[in-house]
Length: 150
Image 1 (cartoon, rainbow, N blue to C red):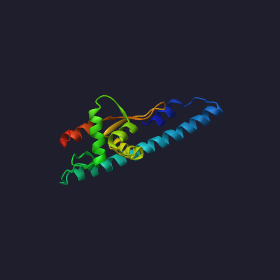
Image 2: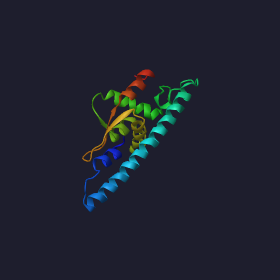
Image 3: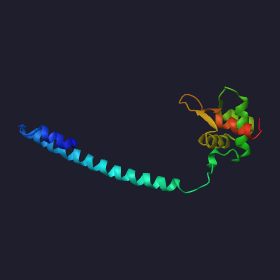
Image 4: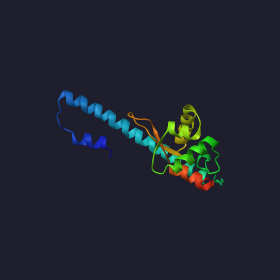
């Protein structure tokens, strides 16, 4: 027995005011729409389960996504940034200090810092009160170690 049928059976013989009757009719429509949605989702779930089973039966070699590969090559400036941040330890470094140390422009430093941040090689501590500061992330340290750069 559905929720709607249970509700109707409970209200048999009960006299309800006009506004409650309207609310009850609206609730009835909503419940019917939800029940239909459940039926549709169950059918979609069955279809997806079948597709998954069919996909698992096919032999496909596993390929590591490029973003997780340690053979991914970084620009020499990016490697320089990672090395510099590895030497700062727990200290965060602002972009202007990184640019100064690597003898590159602030614009170029910020470009490569953003790329490294997006690729999760470094963490950025953004602040409204002071310049963004950067720290080596685990992935950046891992890249340096696996490529014998430290």
